[in-house]
Amino acid sequence: MNTVIQKITIPDYLDKERKSLERTEYVNGEELKMTGASYIHNCIVVNLLSAIKNSLNSEKFKVLSNDMKVWIPSKNAFFYPDILVLPIPPQFHDESNDIVTNPICIFEVLSDSTRNFDKGEKFDSYRSITRFQEYYLVEQNKKLVSQYFINANGNWELIEFTKSEATIPLKSLEIQLGLSEIYEGIEF
Image (cartoon, rainbow, N blue to C red; front, side, top):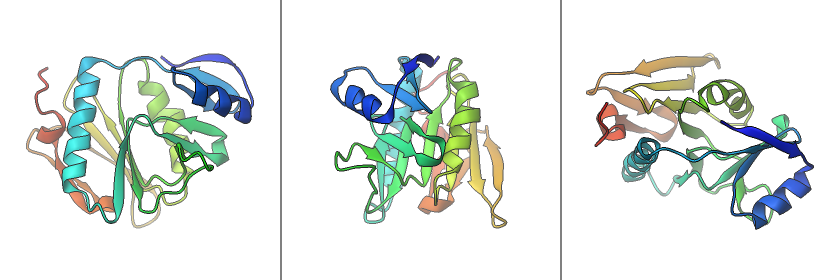
């Protein structure tokens, strides 16, 4: 679970974060310590990265993993998504090029300690990003991917995928992922 470390300003947070071996997220002056990920969590992230990268048009998009921070100015927050996809060229928070501001698609692999935060405050924050279009919550204890996307009316819609043969359309990226690809090598 993410726990509050202390109140801190953005410049102090960024300076400390760039010098530290530990990663923390930041929400409105509060530094949130991140916990380690499980074996299954990491396997799912690798499966997702591979499947997305192999299908993605690399001239239009770039897929990145959980070491890239996202800045959400309207929420005064910095997060490390498990996977994010950016249009090319990426937009950066500052000249350090270690924080992006323009993801269009984000994946979070859920754990018991982060589930509520990822579904709630994090999703609310991500939705405030201009041009953000799709959010995926991937369970690690069962086959379930929740896809949130902006529909034709500009509202967020939810579709859940649970069947091994399911194909998930990533509309903003113009690709499809099989649920079997995401959970390849994972046994429940």
